[in-house]
Length: 632
Image 1 (cartoon, rainbow, N blue to C red):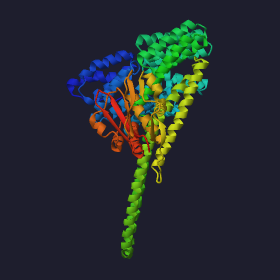
Image 2 (image 1 turned 90 degrees about the horizontal axis):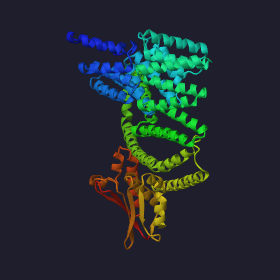
Image 3 (image 1 turned 45 degrees about the vertical axis):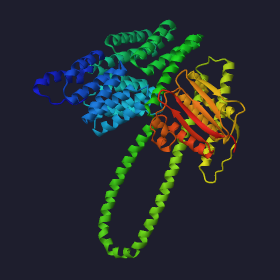
Image 4 (image 1 turned 135 degrees about the vertical axis):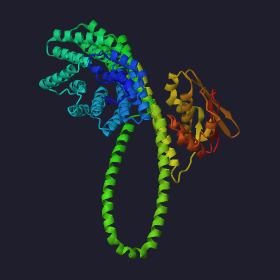
């Protein structure tokens, strides 16, 4: 908890009540709802920015036990104030709270916030904060089954917490320890249980006391004292409901459902599962929601009720898809976290290097006096040395220029791969997910059709890779362009294969106003790349139920292909720079790969002696034009 500041005399009474709430609110029998309401009522009267930040963080921390959206709101508000006042403790508490909010819904961001909070806690030597974050990181790894060492984090937090003056957090920490370490023997489990329960009773932490009683009920049931264990768990559920401890209620629903199903009381077990599903959705516990949905799916599947099984598996898949989309939209992933860790290691390495450099400089200073005697000898070779340095500098500049060109080409290549390979792989993932071993609701005919779709996507992916290799070859010295006669309509169909599923999903209609016999003279793979890019942009930016029109205009020795969509359109300013590398390099949104693909399309068109341009206006859609030669 934050330290109590010194206040003027006319405010001391108000702040005394507030600080009492901050320090002891959760340990003197208040329910979380009562404490949140009390803090919210006091909040408008707080004029000190530091204390105001602490109150916001406290409300956020309590809110995560019931309404996680409120947790995020208060934590972000506290972060903004703490940053403005350079209050590091407030910033780290806000990061910790946001990390808790993102557990089970975006583990990438959760790791980021926990890591940032841990660095600040270590910097300000806040041992209690360090223990909290390590415990939370252990919980994150355990909930998401992300492959990290949850046991290591919880053990470190447990050992660190032994030095805390205020050890109230240890009751929470020990409960996590008991849940994560499944290798504990019965005596070890009992010793830790007794220790955590004693601390909860010492501080009258009712939430933890109820949770320990619920854990005791499960243990008694598993040891054979089934009725006693069941009664204990039901009493814990009643107490949690009375005091508003929603997280404990949801946990208890899960345990009671297992007991009822074990006793063949299926209806009551299903009732507990559905109650748990509704509560976890209402209060934002995504990790429990997926657990309840999966249990209901497995139950109905094993009891021959496919309609209900399909309903609950659809809820499960929808929640997982929602979590995946949140991670995509956040723009943060494990790569960012790994890079951050690498930066920390690099900074530590630089600090060590600076220390060694200082020692070395001291030695060099001592030696410099003796070396002065030999300075006159260096005059003989000074001119040669300067010339050598000049040549070396010129060589370095040339190499740097080549490296920059190579790096720029590699960046473009990676972005193109990310841009065009993502679509077929997304199609493969979407189709293959239907074969999830947990969902066996497809007929053989449907499975064969899906396999044909997968095979076709794989074939088109290989064709795309051929085109990519042709573009790479075009960047090398000695490349020779060899055009061939191509049937335009068939080529457009082939290029659109990647986007048919997306068009069906958005109910987009494709009108192809191209005769079968129309042909052009071009490089097949390069032309396919350009057509795919134009069709991809049209599909991506078309509204639901939109129309994409592909038409041609024939001239004496040219054919103009136009692909028009009904999207939001592009401003003239962006149109003027749409096909330039500078525009592609400067793009910072999720369409960065598309920007590079347009610049590469422009380059490929130039190689084929073709032209590509676009016309658009905001709100009137966009039309891309490709001017191709009929003959060589």
